[in-house]
Amino acid sequence: MSEQTEISFNLKKVYVKDISFESPLSPQIFLNEQAPEVDIQMNITNSSLEESDLYEVVLTITVTAKGAESNFFLCEVQQAGLFEVTGATDQLPMVLEIACPNILLPFVREAIADLVGKGGFPQLLINPINFEALYHQKIMSQQSGQKPN
Image 1 (cartoon, rainbow, N blue to C red):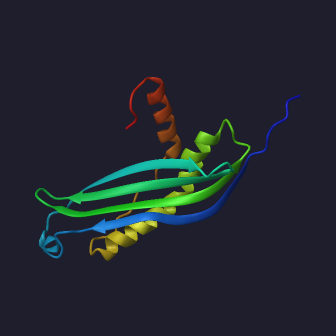
Image 2 (image 1 turned 90 degrees about the vertical axis):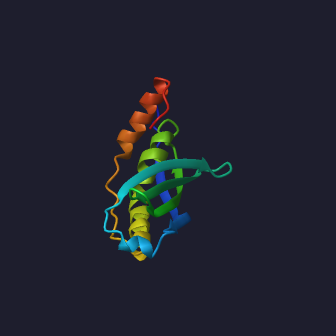
Image 3 (image 1 turned 60 degrees about the horizontal axis):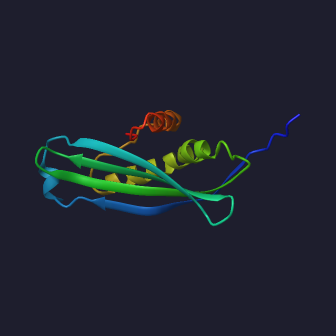
């Protein structure tokens, strides 16, 4: 009978690693009645801290709002978390790219909504993200030799 290792997963700290909001054409941009086209990009990175069971996971969301001839705003938030993960040797990539970003997403959504609102623009809500589907898409594209989206 094989021994099953128990997985332990603890959130130690949530913090903003980097935050930026730019609206270089303010206040003139507020006179523009055209609705901007909004582009949202996301990235997940992780790293281990020394030789421990601590991992930093950073969820970066970049929002660009552009009109036909001008940029309305650029907002980028790197929301980070410090996680303690033990006993998840085979499942570690899934924990770091699915479970951890799911915990960080509400924090980054709030930061972006707050920054955009304080920049004078209507509230921007980031839709829910299926990190599990993105992880499996990444694995499939790696196996086929393609670069993930």
